[in-house]
Length: 301
Image (tube, rainbow, N blue to C red; front, side):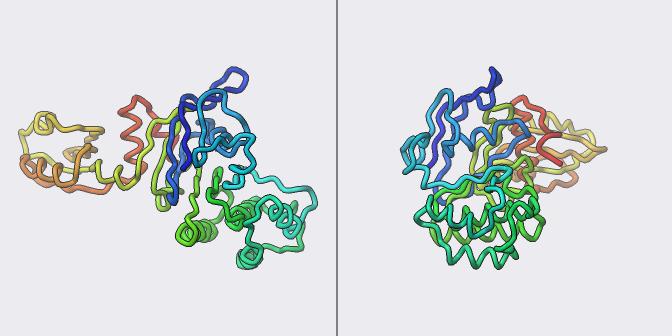
């Protein structure tokens, strides 16, 4: 498990990460989303031991990571813009990582680079951004590490490659217990793969929760009230997170189980009502607005 406890980091007096506490459980996909400048990359670099936090504690399987080579062998970090040695080819890069990671699987790496259509003889400098990202992900997968930290995981990948990468993550989670930690500024990219999501804004954590629990505890209701009914009075006592009206149609985001919310609306005087499954985007918008943040424009694209 990866734990960050009250972690802080500043650059030139400006806070990049501010009092962040998270738990990243093993064999789950942890998604870290937020705006550009929210602190995602800085947090990932601290978890990877690339930079040291100013305050707080970061533990990987109960060990400090910074200046700890043995702990670092348990993780592979893929930055937003992967770096490769000038004029290097795939076999040369493979040889480098084989020295760093004793568990590196060369046979699998060769097969995957062929499957992904990456030319092993071509200079990596001449690869496109998407091809470089593919290569870095394949290196991370084949390193055999327990944790894979990916910054802006799917940036530069086309839809087909995104699905291929997600399938690889799923396979290695099942086969050897891989734990991917993925960051993105785009919530939709991570919605179908993550088990747990954390939302960063201005260096702090607004929300960190298991996705299944999140979806079961929040309901989206659309309804039309009967003539003469005061909606606010009818819904009095409910934990309303968001309420919008378009004509006579009310859309309500409410905290509670599906059964409890359904029973409550069934006893109201409505012409009709239906309970819909809110998207993660809608849940996050509602949660952040409750917390006092108006980020509707910055987690959608």
